[in-house]
Length: 116
Image 1 (cartoon, rainbow, N blue to C red):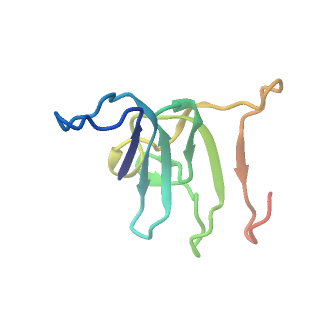
Image 2 (cartoon, helix red, strand yellow; image 1 turned 90 degrees about the vertical axis):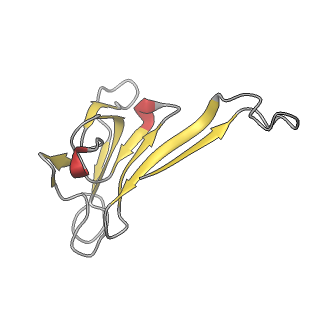
Image 3 (cartoon, rainbow, N blue to C red; image 1 turned 60 degrees about the vertical axis):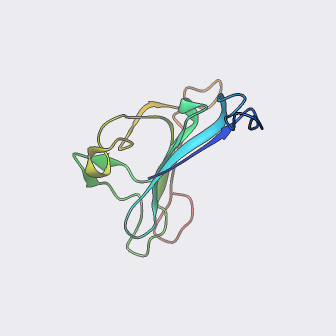
């Protein structure tokens, strides 16, 4: 897992500490052993997180095909449980809806890489 945070303030030259520790932007990413991204949790806007490999009871549900091509993509608030090693990010608890439609945002691809 990789976490990055970008802070609002610079470093104080005399005390060598951050002037402001408020995070402007931050994300946590998790990858499988093949380097495929499992999820990206947006720390600054949780509802804008992305799920690439959904899990059900720690079993991957086919976010990638056998050639490691992305097959599906979901956006919304990630679950705090489930996922690889039960470390979270295994499903979307609150999906993003397209404005004014109530349609859940998600993209699925067919086996040749086009939109399904």
